[in-house]
Image (cartoon, rainbow, N blue to C red):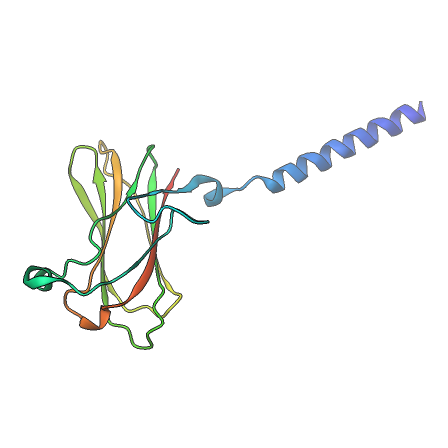
Length: 171
């Protein structure tokens, strides 16, 4: 009888330990709920294909100089609906005195409309940046893409600035 009780205690203890160990391996909160979105036409390769690495280039031609059209329309594909979206920007430049960089971001909807969710000018030190959001779509709208625009139209010091961007969809 004592042997049966001892075996049950061992089995119960082993199951409890296994349950606790498995629970420790399961991501919780934001870790389990967010997924990186893949860039559309981005670099999409390497160990972290969801991170797009770019450099602000000098605008070309008179129209480019007037509009500052550099690195426009970096889109991230939304393949399934999410409750919210987080956008990440990190400065990679090694320039000791970089210029200011206008950053805009949009939620693009399946009906062809969009919503500007970020409109900032940043001058971040190398290796730092910002998380924008979380942003949710208005009721009745389905997000099809998340768009980043990084440009240098008013600050020539921004030319040559390199950065990384990524987007997460979260439930």
